[in-house]
Image (tube, rainbow, N blue to C red; front, top):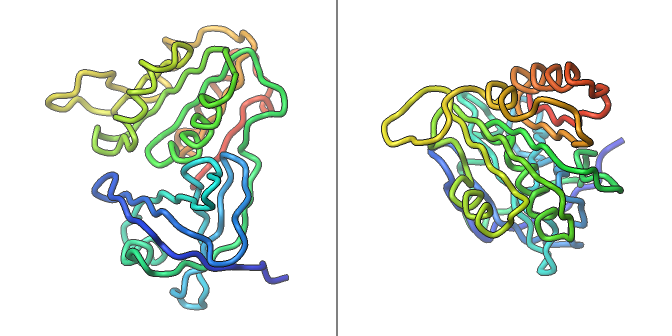
Length: 236
């Protein structure tokens, strides 16, 4: 059964890293109603049998204006992401959705542990914006990793949250030392092993590639979490 689609026009384009862009879009039909952490499927007029359908996470919670944001990276030789990178303000995008269950729970846990790699921060940032704008008073930890500091998208913004929210802690990490970097060096799992030593009512939420998500989920299971208690969104 064909998915119902509608169109949105791109109102703004922002470059977040050499291979990462953010679109601000305005629906041309009905407003897009969604939960933080969900995604839409873009129907792209490319590929051997168009449309080529790609999933893109929503970058910010639903806004009264009806505008919504997508953030994505350019995959080397990727037909879909290559096409997306050619789009400019004024161009239209066909999409369907929203979809996905990587959302905040109905009842808050004692605390949250968010783990992201590279563009895996996109739905997690959306969740954090929702959470930090709520009355939740428990501890919130974000461990965010990337190959280099340039690929820690939204890093400056997230760093600013630490000063404004006493219950929020941010641990950025890159995989190899580089000039000028004063933060942690190593993987997300390296950081977690130092920061999280026992199960104390936390809710882990993890997003990134399977090469990160699988070992991180196993780490939490070793601490006593059931598999279903570790919420994961795997990009590839």
